[in-house]
Amino acid sequence: MLNELNALESKVAQVVSLCRTLRAENAQLRQQLSTVESDRGNLAQRMESARGRLEHLAQQLPEAKAAV
Image 1 (cartoon, rainbow, N blue to C red):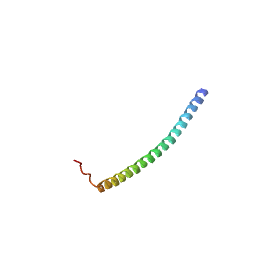
Image 2 (image 1 turned 135 degrees about the horizontal axis):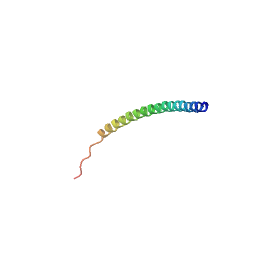
Image 3 (image 1 turned 90 degrees about the vertical axis):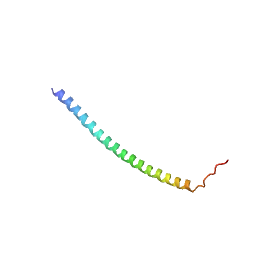
Image 4 (image 1 turned 120 degrees about the vertical axis):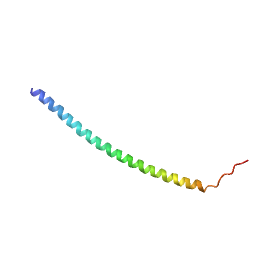
């Protein structure tokens, strides 16, 4: 009986340790996700800004006349 309780105690300790590890990993992944989402937003803003500048430059180009 004592051996069974010791084995159960060991298994419970392993589960607790695994839970702690998974919580830490989950927190780290949430932080990484937050960083990636922030980077994605910054890149989207930069792309929009570049698109606007390109459109502005394209409007300044003289129109090409079709050669007949």
